[in-house]
Length: 293
Image (cartoon, rainbow, N blue to C red):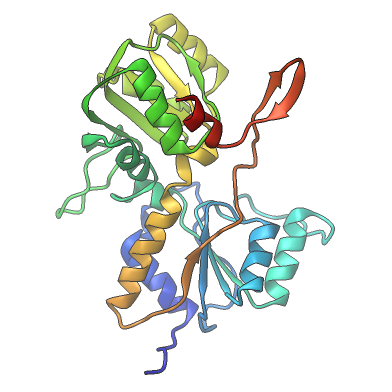
């Protein structure tokens, strides 16, 4: 049976049923960034960030639709210069009839969203949002972040090992006092620095996020509350395969079977460098940690 064709507009409708675009924050920019709404979708590449490398990865696989968490166009563009990263991406995308779509804060707020993906990877139970209300049949708007419990208390070393393995990260930064035993954990994937005090007041023993502000780190130090800066990319990347699977199921329910794949090339733009024998060296993501543990 030949594959059923559908347009970018249909894909946007499917995405809207999964992660409603109206749920995004007012300051955000979501939906179709670049492309023809009437164009047929011949394949979808999903990633966290819209980059030049990702565009070329899509082209190399003959996929004409790119779906990312972070939007390509966030602030209004006053100029487009072809010799800048933004200009090159727009020129390539338009020149090759690519569609670029973003699901940003609407994906953060979805029940299965960014923070939930991290919470599930850590094995947290009985989770609830740090802000807003739980999503329910009544259509209540969910909130950012998650707080929940580990299946059983872990020592600080066991917890850090679990976290680093879950993130496949070579390191993290910690402010405040790391408890000897950890049971209640709060987190927010991405830039969730401003929710640290909320996590503390809700009874979390540790709070995990990315891009912790210096002032928040000082507050954590004074409060004796453990705040972990695990990086923006590591705390959000887990949503990519989750979104891919949900999109596949949603398309299949409509009799659509497009090629849907996740990036095989995109990685953290930030790299860890450590001093070893008085020489700087790059840390590999996870293998040294497994050997060490």
